Image 1 (tube, rainbow, N blue to C red):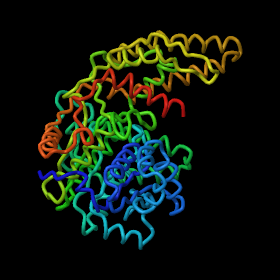
Image 2 (tube, rainbow, N blue to C red; image 1 turned 180 degrees about the vertical axis):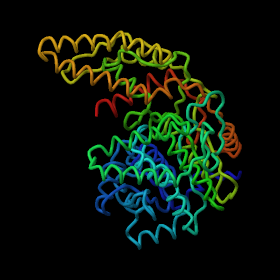
Image 3 (tube, rainbow, N blue to C red; image 1 turned 30 degrees about the vertical axis):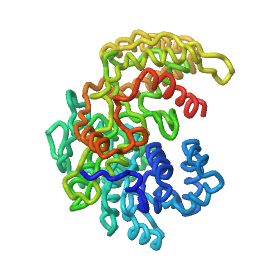
Image 4 (cartoon, one colour; image 1 turned 135 degrees about the horizontal axis):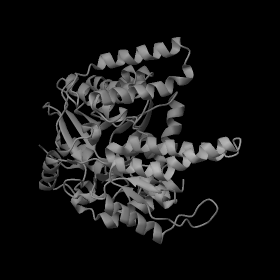
Length: 491
């Protein structure tokens, strides 16, 4: 493992980044531009109808974000010319051959110049339509691999996956690759081509039956059904796992690094603490509590939540790039998380959230302070279902009969409560695998990378990704929750 200076390594390099408008990709792009202004070029692949639309997305959804304010302060009036020279928006789509890049000249230029390919593109909806998730998370990964193999100067492909491709594993989850066709329950071998044909046949069936309006729901149901058939809890992690399989199977001699982050949260340190975009997995729970909407929650107080700040993931990506170029060994997999080295219990997150919103109450749209109330935490699914039955389902049944007796006088109230209960039950069913997750992510490979980085003198403050340095109380109360309020809840 040869670790030269990360800054030196990035000098004069050309990097292609897919999924460039995503949260993690933005943190990575900002980092690269800030630490190495002599990067040759960043090609940022994004969904767009044409070059003009891609430029608009680039400036509105990437470079215009507050995340880039430190870089703007460094470069001052030179920032626009710097972006114009270094950052090239590329309209495309990873679900298509050649990444959907229609401009032949631009495509040839990218092939010729690219040294590193970073695949951050994904649809992260747990119950995404199966056709969409299969196209992006599975076949998209293969399309990125095939594109990278056409770049004569390419040194490696770094693929961002998720630690939760392990499904509902328990005990120590190792940094191990999937074999082609491997299922989690070991009952049947996965035929990815067969899954594609299944989607096509289902789509034809729906169109023949004239059920166009029901396609989205039918595809969501099919994805969840196929995921559970092979042992995964949802469509997202199932299709991400299949993407990893294809990359490993068809990699040939291309060096591959697979980064598997856990639950990615706001920045810990650089470019500044607390930047976040959109609700991450645990954030919706904390925001709901702060707004006074959370009445009950499914989680064991002793449950270990594995969260990791986004800048630490970006640091791990850069350090792994430096460590593994042109090494045609098997896939190198890194878990980037905290559950092994700095475990965080749900009870601690609960206490931090209560303390923060007690001291800093949310102000609702009417300008009134929201007073939070005690939340009932239920440690098992049977307990949760019993609570829901007593607290909501029985009153809902009573309201149903009252509505019938009083000639639908209570219809609107009944329908509103019925909708809320169904949404709550659906969300709990989707999030249950994570709320009750009992696995600990082993990170031996990541620890070796950290040790090698320190031995070679990489700046820990700039490139560190050791979760041991995080004081969770300080992070949540003084960094993450204020960032969540500022950048997500107030938007």
